[in-house]
Image (cartoon, rainbow, N blue to C red):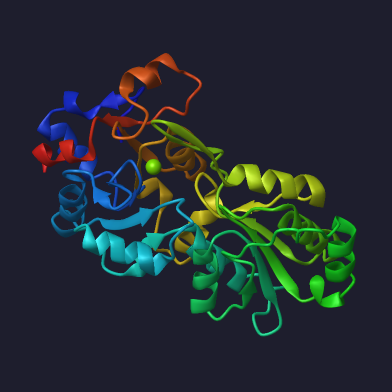
Length: 313
Ligand SMILES: [Mg+2]
């Protein structure tokens, strides 16, 4: 492993890059901003990841905080865009991590417990594909016009089933977030102490050139304030995400490279898990921004684009 502050890989010799390539067996790569932007691949990214896997024998996983698609749907996108990951188990996404986490919880029994989802339909689809019943995902739950909040609370929360058989509350990005959903989640978490409380990620805001869109952190903060409990994070930078791979022996953090475009998410994740990190400049952070902003988590290595690695391979 290379020592010192962030190294611009374009300054390295071919020999130094060859030595670096021998320092890891596993590669985790972020999705948006690193290898693709929505449904468009970033030039050269697939060629690099495919070469690392097929030519250099690295195990490659794609890891995203995107909770709007199931693991299977993300795998299909990866295939469509030319990424040759062997199967959907090489996709690490919040929806998949939620399923993995629930399955190993001693208090959670999928034959008895349902999951209440404040979030989008993909979470419900992923749970269903794995034999877990849920409700709320992708649905609207407004306070009906003319109804008072007291009417809603009395109608919904005096029934024992409103909380008793709910094994988990899962929060994700939810365009239909409402007072009623917040109240329902709070009721379950306050009344049923054994119910798990999970969140897909804590991305605060999604920035686009002309827009700022509230992220999942905003939704979960409101529910946490009511429930007096903290949700467990199922996305980067939480090290919980890697537990199944570490426990199965499939991944050793000290022999793993994390590639991403966001210091606070991807580079923080690498640090939290003890992995080496490579930041690419195809998202919002380039080397000059990093250097001017010392409080950001600093990566070990930097490349303007992942595709720039091709010249060394
Ligand atoms: Mg990203």
